[in-house]
Amino acid sequence: MKYIFVTGGVVSSLGKGLAAASLGNLLERRGLKVTLQKLDPYLNVDPGTMNPFEHGEVYVLDDGAETDLDLGHYERFTNSVLTRSNSSSSGQVYERVIKNERAGKYLGKTVQVIPHVTDEIKRRIFKLGEEQPCDVLITEIGGTVGDIEGLPFLEAIRQFIQDVGDDNVLIMHVTLIPYIKAAGELKTKPSQQSIAKLREIGLHPNVLLCRTEHALDDDVRRKLSVFCNVPLDAVIEGRDIEDTIYRAPLLLQEAKLDDVVCKRLGITAPTANMADWEVFVRRVVNPEKHVRIAIVGKYLDHKDAYKSIYESICHATAALDCKAEIAEVDAEDVERDGAAGFLAGVAGVLIPGGFGERGTEGKILAAQFARENKLPYLGLCLGMQIATIEFARNVCGLTGATSTEFDESTPHPVIDLLPEQKKIKGKGANMRLGTWPTTIKEGTKSALAYGQREIRERHRHRYEFNQDYRAQMEAAGFIIAGTSPDGKLVELIELRNHPFYLACQYHPEFQSKPNNPHPLFKGFIAACLAHGQ
Image (cartoon, rainbow, N blue to C red; front, side):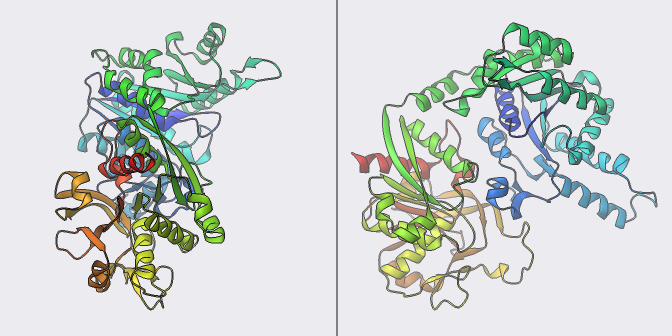
């Protein structure tokens, strides 16, 4: 097995996750089996309790692990199906070390960062290789070289290289080459200092991936090669991409990154076949049609809070050879000013997931506008609960209907806490998480979209449709289109006499792929196109 470690220098947000995913894409298309891993230095056990403004979206895996959004990049760019073993944080590492100490597993020794914490980090890398045997394991180290919290991970890598041999490991350092406008020059000094930090720890990069707004000329490349002691052909340009992130693998292939990696690791593999990926990128960049849709949310100020939703829309529009113009509508603005001014002129409305009462009345107004004006509607998780509340209030006449998440004393709790959640006090990793089966009702738009009766989707929620209101709402035109196999949990709803009004309790955005868009997103975009004609 070969190991690639991806580190970052100078500043954060350089796209290490996208670089790792793109490299995984190229190696996979050369016929290699690849898996990816994220090691995050933060002390949270996982990002599940973080505010989306703090960390962006929480990406949920099949086994229920709540992880960093970079794992979404990994799954979208490769064929990997990841598990909780593909993601570790400092919080998880220290939690395990402390449990081991309490259990007496260190035989009375003083517990220290070296060797106990670093051994646990190495154990997690080796364990993943055993659980998911592959040709290449790509591990991204979160944060920036020089961060105090990241030092144990870098030291663990140094030791790991001694364990598996230098010939089996490649370090790719993603670094910033800033352009100083006043001088009219690209500057390499920050990268030199970043690599000096790595060397202090005992690590030396084999590949430099240089994030830059401008092309690297030969002089800059030679300077980086000489001062950073990296072969000239291993100084890879990573230009800012204006149109779509899915162009990244194509640009890195053009820069011969995968050739350099295979040569360094002694891998013999054919050239990556990117033909279908090129077709997908071409459809994203040069579509024939256009559609305008509204996302009514409350985390819009953080560009990554709805990352997987935006990517799923991209996948669906590309499949239909169109481009979506997305109107980002703040739910609190709708609550204050009404829906018409924000939603008039859009071809569809999407309401994503979320937690807490803030903005919910604005989302309810948006769902009502979509229902009454026959606008295609797609509700995800909370978006399904919002659709339920709106229908209960305005069609069934259940005044004050809402979720007990927002009002515990509501006279009509059409959305209520799952029974198994009522005794839980903590907040971390205890929702209904991961992949669960759903049975689709025949003759519904959902069945038409999926083309099958049994599906499996990823969940992340505490509240659920209250079955006490099922008969009354169904009689008024509310369709229960999908349930858990035992019928106890409502997973998917539709409205009768509406061109496309679907909402699901799960998160379909976590299973969409560039060349395999999720059926609900594809159906929603197709309905939006039909509405706009």
